Amino acid sequence: MEKVTRYRQIVQQILQPYGEQKPAYGNIEVDKIFDKEHDHYQIVHVGWQGQEWVHSCIIHIDIKNEKIWLQWNGTEDDIAANLVVAGVPKEDIVLGFQSPFMRQFTEYAVS
Image (tube, rainbow, N blue to C red):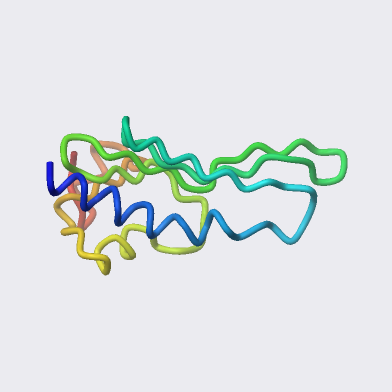
């Protein structure tokens, strides 16, 4: 459980700056969704850009079975590499957006 507590802190630290970056366009709110009880973490953009409704998940991370699952990364940054720099071993990071078959060819955990 100590490992999961540490991973929660790391994920929140990595996501915090993204939750403070308001898009330069439109009337967009940036929501930080940190569900610490169920270990779901998201950065979501919600609002209007001109006449278009915007509802977009920018980053989605879950913690499952003592591993960090990067479910979606809509940024230009390498979030998985940032997790490694923060002290998470590659074998504890799953690229959930990759198919289970393709994960075996990455540097990270299969599941």
